[in-house]
Length: 164
Image (cartoon, rainbow, N blue to C red; front, side):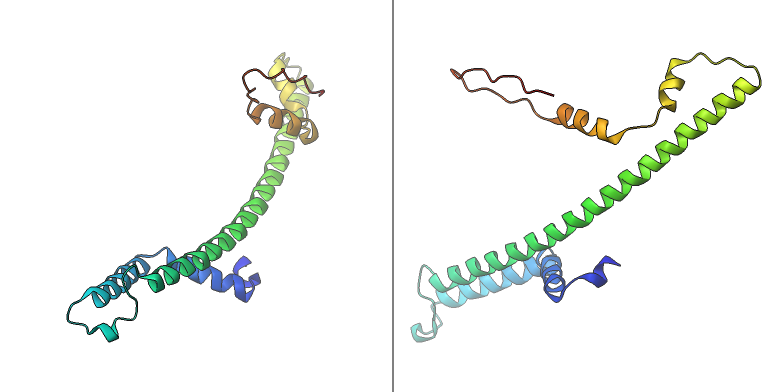
């Protein structure tokens, strides 16, 4: 589905990236560079047919240009894959929140059935699990817990605590 929405530039970029990460691409390069070097360094080739003199400036230029183009295509493909992954993670979060709501509702219904049957359940964990998850409260807590501690430079003044 997502592949149909790609522009022609994204399709070309993905093709180049897919081919650039393959063994045929590697073999093609080994053959191409080896052939180039053998041609340029062979004593049997007349000097007038050796088009890239020692230090191989033309070969260096072509390899550098190829590296720039190939890395650009790889970065474009990675960016698009990251966007797809972000969308999938967001969808996964939405599904998990819905599932959590369903589980909380089932626990509440089960507790109501137990009360109706005259059974007592004094479990504080069940009461806590029945409460709805509030993402607006969880997100700042998770960000704070996942945030790496800021290391202070030697001799610097300590940073004031941030208000939360």
